[in-house]
Figure 1 (cartoon, rainbow, N blue to C red):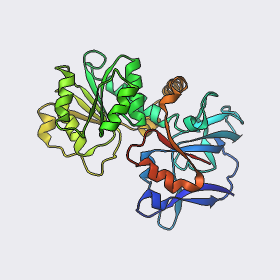
Figure 2: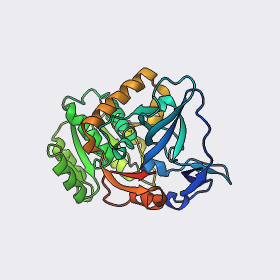
Figure 3: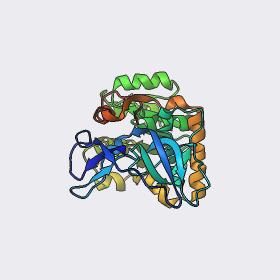
Figure 4: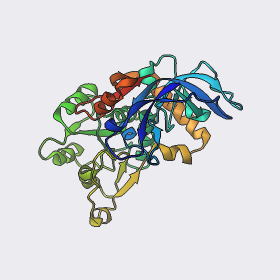
Length: 329
């Protein structure tokens, strides 16, 4: 028997629904699959939007985990038994043992701890895709200024690192003065604005000082996303990659039509299904190089044992959290 984090087919708060459950031993991996002994997994905010499950059944939660390959199925030449891998995106990753398609398992550099490896793909890959999407606007990389909302999040910080490396100007937006100070100390060359101050939007315009603001990247949504759109210059784009706010984005057609403002959605699932294997391999190699060179950018907010999954989930939404919550199996 093995243990997994499961949830039932009912609505409710993830912290109240998730529990440690015994599951049957896995069969040997099938064709094209590998079996992974999971060492640790990350708890991302998006993981807490639990996928629907038929009534009366339970499903295994999670999408990203790291561990060691213990068996390979027919047709698998790599990774080899004994190698460390991170698996993403795999629904049902929060278990002590998983069988997964080999192409969803990515090699882990020896220099990375399990805590860093457990968050090696999802957030860095999201930051890379945001960077690529933002550069579609012709002013980015020239005189354009990108608004990076929730810039103190894991993706937000990685996006800042990508931008600085490519000499792209960004402006960080956070929700508290304390978070703003953290970013000022971490990236002193990048301006930061907190939305808990009066007239924060005017401060953004003052920092731009006439430069175009062609792009805002936003994982929140809701009213704040609408306010970010109002800061974009004509032809600008809001790139939405999360749904942290409970409400919809309030949007009047005139705010889109008059200024020709666009909204673009981005997620890694589409990357998985719409890009070629060669592009995916190249992207993962790029991400692995970034993570190996900047492991300190993948902060660990806290590490919990498997039987404290409720505490781990509640920590994800704790005010002031910096970094990713990790669970050891």
